[in-house]
Length: 191
Image 1 (spheres, rainbow, N blue to C red):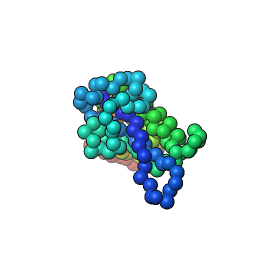
Image 2: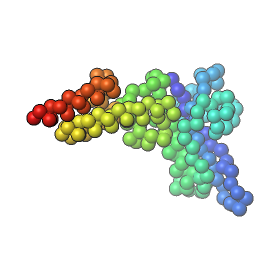
Image 3: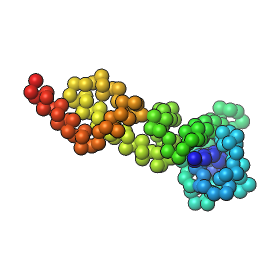
Image 4: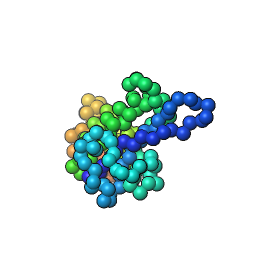
């Protein structure tokens, strides 16, 4: 199980800027004694309860990875200011990541694909992003083989995280995919 939090700090700005600017980051915490002390309510609210201030960097001993940052957000007085919008977006993504990783450290590709459709791939941790990119490449090759041979309707049904893509991935490796391409190509020539 992974734990993600939202951390907020003052942004570094040139002296010519007069306003208040904030910096936000979603942090994946490293496992340790402080890791178990964080309650589920605080994690679901996106806030941290550590007595120690966390830096928005992976050099800190409690931080395993900085998932995403929002830099130089103007902190105005209304909820429409850039800092309030960034804070709300960071908390929403953090809650979704905590839900995604609630049961295991490796969520299903269907859940990851739904997360990417909602928040974008840049909000994923690096390991999940690499796993998602591999699945995306594989699905792209399956779709191109099917579309090339006239199965456009079936090719549209193959998307990352779909049951069809998962079933094909379990049944076809890259060599078998090349063999499928060859078989479809030769049957087209014969017809």
